[in-house]
Length: 178
Image: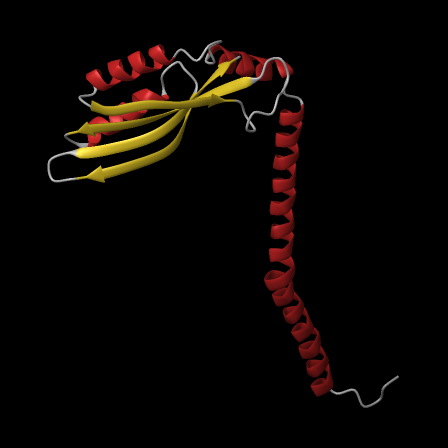
């Protein structure tokens, strides 16, 4: 064995071992522990996404069919422009909005006249100019316009505010089956 092992060497060896343990503890707390927490968080996210994927993939076609039926009920068989005008007129009178101009353009099918299946959806576009005394009335008008029973999309909106009046120009499209 070592004959000249002194107390000084023992303390030095204990100091080196304690230093190594302290460095290991600090490394564990500053490097390994955060990586384990990050791994745990990522595993939770993966689990959440897997659950969402399972719920979406297991979604029954019945709910999809119900949504399609609901949309189909909003699409009439004919364009009925007189109903569109009547509905817009009722909405404008209930919201204190004055319709200055309303015109329709040519009817067309989706894809510029390409023929689709027998249940193809056709569209009719309209342009509307309206005037109101404040923006809130026009906002109410727009809310009622988009929540009416007929399926429609708003293509463009232009809003101009003068000193006393607010002017609105919109282009919208209604749909019907042929």
